[in-house]
Image (cartoon, rainbow, N blue to C red; front, side, top):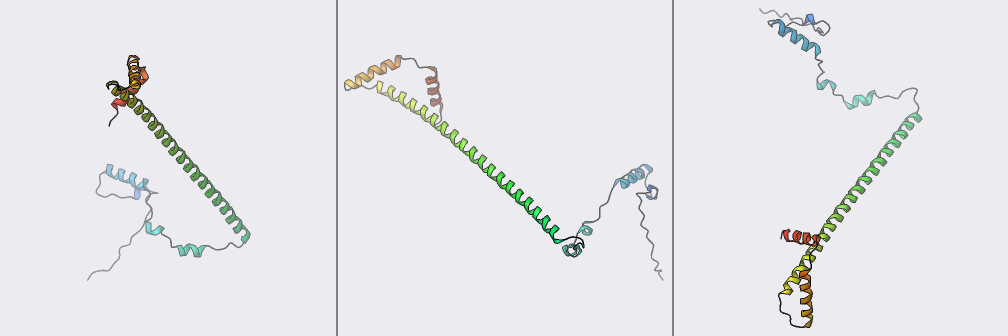
Length: 176
């Protein structure tokens, strides 16, 4: 027959006395390292033990005997005022951010408009130069065209200043 003797198990906190921790069959160095480790480790309880039923909290909350209702209302009024102030600050911040975003968009639009106008001006300058050069090679039909041809001849002898030449080069190098 088997004996039904239950072994007795004792729980001992070995953090207080490291001599009680036993590592049978281990080297002395390994046992010392293991003792050092287990002395430094703090074991947390399992997650299940920290779960709380909300009904228990509801049941445990009780009205203090000395507290009056006016204190409770004063606290809620103070909390309301704090919440309203917080909401107001958040609203002001959102308005500020929106104003900054609008301002940034306006700056980008203005920059794009300036770039567009500058390119348009360069294209018009180049078109004017090209038109004058093309008209130079035409045979004049009347007196006005003859006068224009003379002006073009003067234009050809006129030296370009550096800015016009740079603009011309810039327009020539622009992609199609």
